[in-house]
Length: 388
Image (cartoon, rainbow, N blue to C red; front, side, top):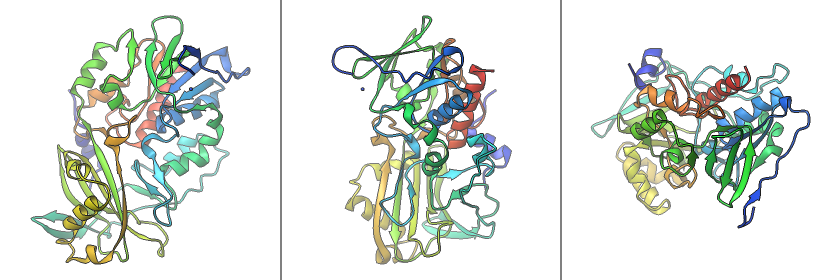
C-alpha cells in the first residue's frame, strides 16, 4: 500500500574542471582518512553538504562535485533585494527547531540562529470567488529564519568544514559502478574515481536521463522515475511601501499544485522592508513562468492582487524579483509532488548496487520528502548505512 505525502502529513497533523582530452580529476587526499576510502558526493545542495559534513565528522576522505558555479542548489538566496536575505528556494523549517542542532551534530557548537514561529491568532486568508475570506491562522508548525535563510545557516555551521572539498562547474554525465571502483566522467571529459559515491543531484536531472549509469538504473528506480510527477516551481517577491496582506493567503491548492501568497517579512525587524512572497508549484506556475520576469510579471501579479486588496498593491508597489526553477539548468524543477505515492521516494532512496548511495529531498526512504530537513535526514541515513 502506498500513500501520498500530503495524506501522510495530514495524518501526522502537519498541515492547518580538465581539457578536451581525458584527464584525471584532482583528488584532495586526506592521509588520516579512515580505511583509506575515497567518497565522491555528486551535488552540493542541502543533501550533498549534509553528507559531506557527516563524512568529515567520521574522518572519511571525500570530495564534492557540483555542476553549478556555487553551492546551495535549491536553497539559493539573494542579499541584493531588500534589507534582509531573500530565500529563492527552500525557505521554512517544517519541523522542530532542535533539528538545526541535529544537522550540526556537534554538542560543542551553540546554534544562535533566530527563528520566528507563527501565532495561532495571526490573520490568514483564503481566496474564495475572487474575495479574501479572513480567518485565524491556527496551529502551524513552520518556522521562518530571521535575518537569514537556509543557505546562511549552512554557510555558518556546515560549509566552513567542507569548503575545501568542493569542486564547481563539474557536471557529471556518466557513472560506471560495476567494478571495484566507481568511475565518473564529467562534461569536460575528466575522469574521477572513488570507492563509493553519494548521488544527490535533483530528481528532474535523473528523470531526464542527463546522467548515464553503467550498469543502468535498476528497474525499481526506472519505474519510480516513470511514475514521478515532479512539480515545476516559481517564487516571486514584491516589495511594497505598506503591508496590506495576512500572514498566509491561499489562492489555490489541489493535486495539480499550490498557489500561496505569504508574508515574506514575517519575523524580521519591524522596520525591515515589507515584502509579499508568492510560492507557486505545479500547473499553477505556468502563467508566471510564461511571461517576461520584468514588467510583464509585475503587471500579472498586480492584476491578481489589486481586486483582492482594493487597488492598494498598484498604489504601493516598489520592486520585485523572481526565481523560475524551470530555468535553472542543473535543477529544472521544484520537487516531487506532494501527492506522489510514497514508494517513489522510497525506491529512489535505495542504493544502486553496493557502491552508489542516494541522498536528497526526494530520495528519502520515508513518507515525507521535498524539504530541507528530509534532504538532511536522507544524508544521515545514507552515511549511517555506509559506515554502520
